[in-house]
Image (cartoon, rainbow over all chains, first blue to last red; front, top):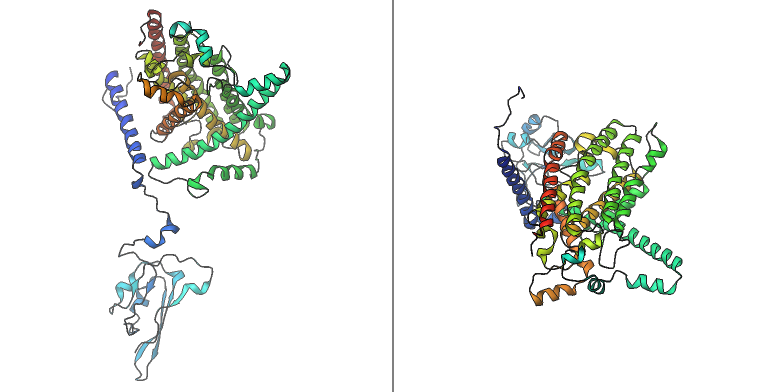
Length: 155
Length: 373
């Protein structure tokens, strides 16, 4: 009758009905199973579950500078992170200590420009930078997006 | 005819299932006939209005909650306990919305269209038997009346689509018109099947004809034909309700809302309200025709049967209705939408011949008296 070959093998009406019913019942079974298993609900009620949030270790939040127990950081103001950053997010403001050695004065981190790529962390030869797990970053204060990462000058 | 189908005589039936409600009797006893008629009608109207509104609000909430669970979500859970007040909040929002009308749209028809489906839902509510004495009207041709008013809903859809002056609306309305006219045939054939079996078109008599055990419900009593008729009824009423998998009238992904694309505020909420009122009506009709309506399920086991009999009929009716509502929701949130041509071939090439054949076989069975005992 038709010149076009059917895209699927022809089935008898009985076969067709059996297949159709089977597939419909399978679908109903899947949704029915979901309904019967409320524990599997995937919704996370975010603001309520803030304390139970779990992050992957490699989650990339804003850059931070870890400090040890003595309050010291490992930055030498070499500037590799500043060079590695594609967005100009990091400004190394170096200074000189009493011995006239070049040390870190301030590491200014412009959060608003950061794309969280992590290249600065990879570039740092002293392991002085880390990506934190902070994520609630919204603010109406411009100053919140300009952070000084080091707590004190380098030595 | 009815008395011949079950053991009770007409007098026994009247004694066991009185047709009048104490409230109506009280009004009739204290007022002149004309006054009582008016007051009773007003009571019925007020009750229907409240019931339809509350039911629609509840069904919208239930649909959102049930569909969320089918999709492993939680659904509304912020406004009120379990999110119960969510639809109330949404309804309030709709009240406050601007009622928009496109330029060049037909003012009169555009504003008339949303009122037609909700009117027909209200009219159909009148003949649903909630209990043996909770039914607003019990015309002898109840199912004819029902079929007429259920069919009226299509006017609202067609007029809305035409008056909106929008191509999506018009396409949605035309599709929906074709769909409703097609599926109405097998829908009415299912009603006819039950009329044939019960020997009456009055909804109350149809329920009373299903007395006895669970096996006396028309779903089981007509061997095979009842179950097949029930399946056809579910399919065709889903199509009548524009619910998935037959929701091409709205078809959000193609027609941006179909016939109600241009409606906002109250116009939209009228369509929405009637959609859910009609869901209740279709389920109520299914319960009445196939599941014994307000009759308590009986299992032929004395003590259990007597315990089940103690529960009022309206509770059984509501339980059956909500069982069916849940079935409609299950179907809607499981199956994908049919294409227009698939939709039409399902009805004309499959459902209609099967429904006709089913009716013919059922006629033979009833004539020969080959019913389940």
